[in-house]
Amino acid sequence: MDPVVKIVMVLFALVLLLPLSARSEIRAGSFEVSPFIGYNRFEERQNIENRPVFGGRFGYNFTKYFGAEIVGEYIKTSVDDGSEAWTEKGQFTSPIDRVEVTFYHLDLLYHFIPKGNFNPYIVAGYGAAHYSPEINEWDMAMASFGLGVKYFLTDNFALRLDLRDNMVLDETIHNLEATLGIVFAFGGKKKPAPVAVAKYEPTPEVKPAPEPVVVAKTEEKVIVLVPMAEPKVEETVKIIAAEPPVKEKIVILAFEDVHFDFDKSTLTKEAQTSLKRSVQLLKDNPKAKIRIAGYTSASGTKEYNQKLSERRAKAVYDYIVTEGLIPAERLTRIGYGQTRPAMYEPIPDNIYSKEAKANMRVLFEVIVK
Image (cartoon, rainbow, N blue to C red; front, side, top):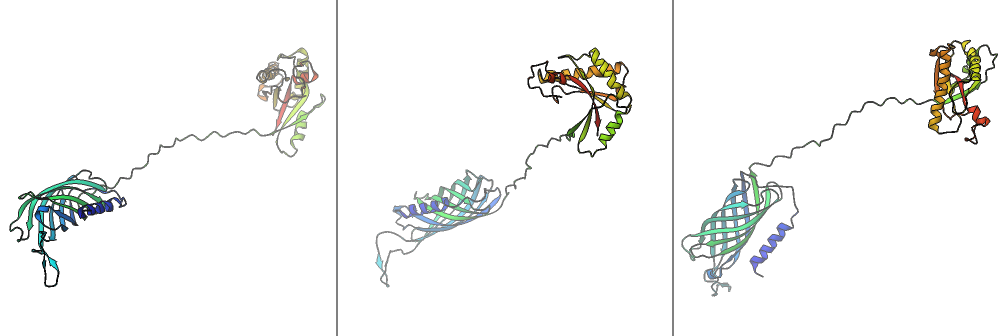
């Protein structure tokens, strides 16, 4: 395989196998110094041996895309004319043992992708080629053109690969070369440091403090059967209230149940008479606070029975207030619907059962806390 091809393959492999580093770029106003080494292939009709090439470049980037550089190259070789001679030490040598070739030129570069680690570019320049006096006594004009790539490992250091044709214009002779160098970059406008942008987070909605939840205390109902002859209801209540208070107590004064007909909330004559007897006991205890509680049987829907129980409690409330039996400020009312029955109803549809009749009622409650 041709040595030039081998060098090109090795150089490309070295570049492509390098790990990607932090993102870099060509900087406008920056200077670059780049020593290099490579291999030069002379055109056959020059009769000069192909040899390594050494050199250096000094460049300046006007912008991140355009740059210019001064290049100097040196090749030490010999004439390859097919003739050889013995030296005193018994070695073969060519008639001209040493040929020195120097290229120096000014090049312009255009970077295709100046941002990033991998910066490919094209290059073209003009200068002169100088051969040993044995080959040519004067400098010859030359043009250099080719392509290359810079691969930045850091912001200021890169590897560089070039493929060139240093063509001697006087004889239209092509000198093909592949070089690998290192680049030291300094100066120029560095890319601004990334601005730390605070991550947007929506302002949390300020919600008003939740209303305190009032948890109903567990009620302990104490049913007290108050005889009609009981003179002081309040005394009975005080005796019960004096017991150790474990839970809130509701004392139910079951004087006489005020019963209703099925699906009715109107007071019958019998209910009014019974109510007056019970109210008389409450009147004798002016400090007692009374809650009128209405109930229903289990027949019907829960919603309907709830409304019916409330109407029954209101009927008793209105009667007591209208008749002036007890001041309204001492009274409250509540409906329990079909809950808290006096007796369990095994057959709810039997509206004439004793259990159903027992549950169609209104009671007086005295709350003891």
